[in-house]
Structures are given as C-alpha cells and as structure tokens.
Image (cartoon, rainbow, N blue to C red; front, side):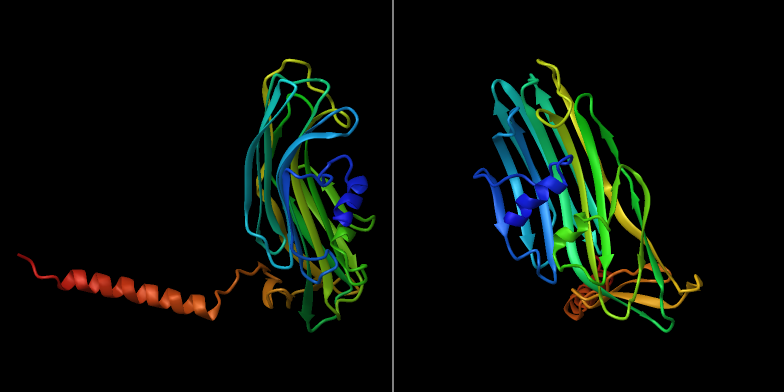
Length: 303
C-alpha cells in the first residue's frame, strides 16, 4: 500500500491512486516488485477543499496473475450533492487495455471534488528472438475513444516502459524515461539497448473524470450534468519494429511473453493466443458433438 500512496505525487494531476480508506475494497495479491504484476483500479470519490476524502467506493486489485475485467457502479452523496459513477477496466491481451469512467452529478457543489477512474496496469518480462542483433526497438500504441466534460476535466493517460535495467518495480512506468501520453492519438516509445536478455515491459492505461476541489476546475453550485471518458476501444500496442544498429529493418523475429511463454508479436504484428491443449480438446469434443447432433437429425425418420 505504501507504493500506491507514493505514486500519488507522481500522478497528482490524474489522481489515479487514492489514499487507503475503508469503503474502497483493496485486494492485495503480490508485491509490485514481483516478476509478474497486474493492477486494476475502478473506483470513485468525493473530497473537500482540504484533500479529505469524504465518500468513496470501488475496487482496487493487484495480483501476480492477470486480473479479469472489473466493472464498478456506485452512487456517492455528500452535502446534498450526488455522484453516480460507472467505471470499467480490462486487459484483453499483451499491451492491450480498455478503460472507461463516467460521473453523473446532481446538484453540484463548488466546495466538492468528484473523481471517477478506470485503469489497468501490468508488468511482465518479454524476450525478443532474432537471428540479427537489434539495436533499436519501436513500440507503437494507438489510443482511441471519446470524452466530454461540461465542467472539470477528463483525462486519458498512457504510460509505457521497456527496460533491461529497471529497479524491478511496476511503478518505474511512471518514471522520467517512460512514455507518458494523454488523449487519443498514436504514440511511439523507442528502446535503445541490448535485447539479448528479457526486457521488463511496464504498461499503464487510465480513463478518468476529474471535477472540482482541490485540484481541478469546479462545477458551479446546483448543476446537473454528466461527464465521461470512454476508451473501451482502446489503448492498444499495435506494432513493434526492430532495427539493427545501422537502422536496417529486421524482418524475422518473435517476442515471447515470459508470463505465458507464448509468442505475442512478430514482424507481421500481434499474434493471436493459441488455445491450451485442454481447450483444444474441449473444442474438438464440442465440434464432434455438433457433428453427431447434425448427423442424428439427418437420420431421424420422418412420419
């Protein structure tokens, strides 16, 4: 929890890491120093001018294995003002996240701040394999979605770091050498260095609605409105390109996610996951059942 709180100063303008409180459910599964680390945050809060959290709800999870999709819907009320929020975060694949947040405010107060956040982060190790020696790797992301904020602001944030010599903490993704991007667009992170050993891959994506005291523009008293940041499609690592030290494009390589021991990218782009042997067997049995069922229907005698 100390690392979550420490990250607050780094991410102050986004406020993605709340202080500990009883009404937000925390599920701690592993240390951020673990080789595989995943973080999901879907929560909201109302606070006052002195940074005090008055009301909050939602879910924060961290685990050593990939976390499933999280959807949180809740209503918070304070001093006659109400926020109804919906937050969502999910990881579809390696370097691919969906996140959204909305806040419907009734009878807003200029003395209150309203926050609604959906975010997902991951740290894993990945190994490049190529007959040629890369001297440079370009990771390119596409961020797409929409947002609206009659009052306050919405924030869409992408952080990414590939590093052979990080401290080993997920929170290195918020450091100075990482990619930090906001809003829709195409963004590229360039790694220069050796790929002979696995790289730490750190990735964080967040969508948030941020209104009022003490950090963001206030909503006038007595307003009813809805703000949203819908990036449920998506923060996506769309391409990786490898180059030699002389800037020649390498056209034969693979990237393996060591968490799953599966190839996730090659020179042609993202590689779809191959079902586990057990899953393949179930698919075969299911297909056989469908075939036998159709055969049975064809042989059914008519009356």
